[in-house]
Image (cartoon, rainbow over all chains, first blue to last red; front, top):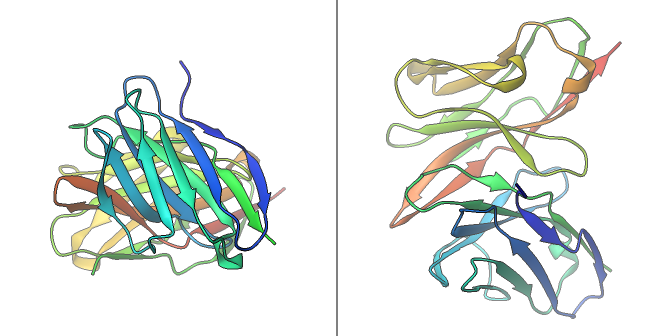
Length: 113
Length: 115
């Protein structure tokens, strides 16, 4: 049974560009959360999606947006990239009603140059 | 505001020695508490969690943690460390807001294991 799948695993972008990261949740999960983990820091909550809508958002600017598809997969989009956006982006899936039963993916390492 | 503090950035222990990683939290209600482990280049793996009940919780890989409400702590312990335990460890508190929940993480403790 596949867990959470994220793509790509690594990415290098230039300042000002836009990037899209993808996440396929674990089978049976319908909720996707995104976290940003800067070097030497703990993960920080970006937002959570279920039923194809953003349900809660952390302290991130509007440059960060997302989408959830009918098959529960999700995308994270970041516009106008800044050097400070360089981080490991983690996707976590869970099942509604099961509280904090998160499964994390291995992440996408984004480097902005 | 909810927060998690892990006072030790980096800890080195000898293989076979005991381990305790500290975690303090700030949360207004009864907290949901977690410990995760992250190996290099990997995502987060749940070691254990506390929701309610017995304050000593057992997890995977021989880890345990004790919830102490009076000290706002949830320290992680292991009686005998193995070289494969070298990794970064994150304590987290579950924060429920509206109809969703999220995790608030500490900054992590990097564990090195000496042979």
